[in-house]
Image (cartoon, helix red, strand yellow):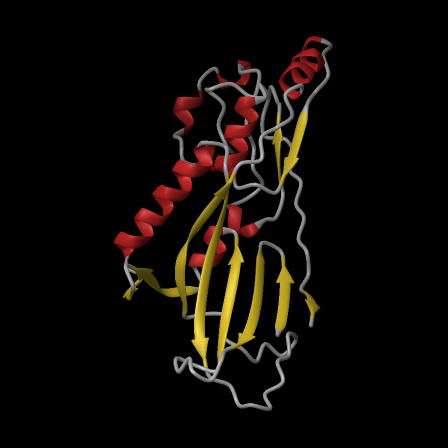
Amino acid sequence: MLSVVRAREQLSIHALHAAQNEGSHIVLMKGAPERIVERCSTIYINGSDLPLSSDWLNKFHAACDTLGGLGERVLGFCDRHESFPRNHVFDADAGNFPTSGLRFVGLISLIDPPRPNVPAAVERCRMAGIRVVMVTGDAPTTAKAIARIIGLISQDSLTLDEMQQTPAADFTGSAQRSDTTVSSHRPWESWSFKLNLCQHGVPDTVLHESPWSRSD
């Protein structure tokens, strides 16, 4: 078995029993949904492999937004049956195994709620004039929902992506807003981003990328 881990993705390759004639091995991958789905060309629906059409992609994004909006962390999963020679040596550096043209098989969402005393702590910091910052590896939708739950931001707060999609005229008077949600980039371009309270402009962001590592 080969196991490869990098930021927002984990891949493993397993040998199958001889009776399973779809291929000698199965490639499994899990990770951030947007990173997983971009590696897929088909989707597994009711026992059949279907083309990953724009209609299915729209349903995928809607499901991710719904689950993330509940404050749940979402993982995507995909696989691919592949035949390799018996003496094939998998090499993570050479990448001599498929990482595209995979089959999307589904989403799993996890609930990891903040501690009960966090909202009160945030409020005490705010009353004391302390600037509160949240650094997270969650997708923007999930992070925004968690930030609302703990009272870090208000219902009117925007992510950076939302601000970029909003006409400038709609921001009249927004400098008076007491809190703004800010993400660094699109979720598939960064591992961590900052939700930051600000009163003027867009604050600095926090980025973190992890290199590939390997365990056999």
